[in-house]
Length: 289
Image 1 (cartoon, helix red, strand yellow):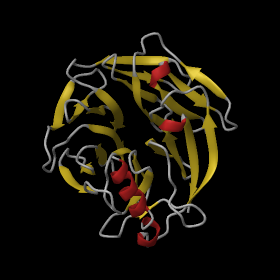
Image 2 (image 1 turned 135 degrees about the vertical axis):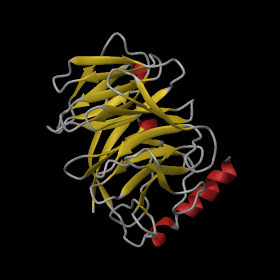
Image 3 (image 1 turned 180 degrees about the horizontal axis):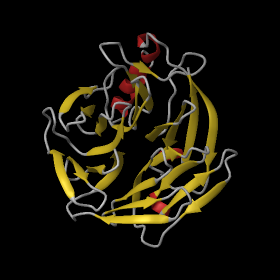
Image 4 (image 1 turned 90 degrees about the horizontal axis):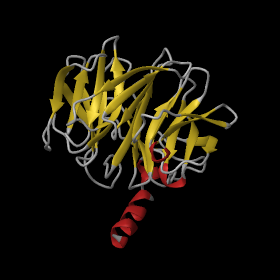
């Protein structure tokens, strides 16, 4: 393991030279609290930043100055994932409760969806008014349900082929409503189209530029840039539509930004990339250019 980490460190030194577009990030925000290994992040339209702190069975809500309040519920068991839609509805996945919790913008619980017991829900994204796509980590699937919890489809299954997963973790959607699924042990991001067909992938397993060792979080910009955190390599990579060479996120000195176990990602309406740095119990907001 030590030799592997030394190899990875040396390889990361080449990332900046391989990044043709020199994607840079400046830390604009650093929010921390009494969190214990937070996992995911999303923002509301008024700028509040919500961070999932499943160990403490709560969501930490930071205002724009970093002051924290808390969203709690006695039915929370082990929260993992979060998504906030354009109407500021908050979707939470709870792997312990085998459930989805949906809160309104006033932080009032609107719905609890109890899932089948064979579903291990680690993340969620709504598409349209009716469909919810839930990552089933242990089941190596993405499960499509309606808002009553009725199953509409199961996508994938365990394996390494196109359309199969090995412990998928997180999910998001692009401007065209395509889905981007972090396929952790296969080291890739799989893309699912609006008709639930698999369209392709970004990345492959490995430790060099354009490869992923333990991808965890994903966020997609309005112009199709795909940001991916790698919890082992400690970097955020950026993939582009077409055959353009991927980048790694660099600081203002054009050096690779190293993070300690980065997990959840979120791009807000102002172009701030929020990154959960799980091992340091904090969330960082990067201005991207």
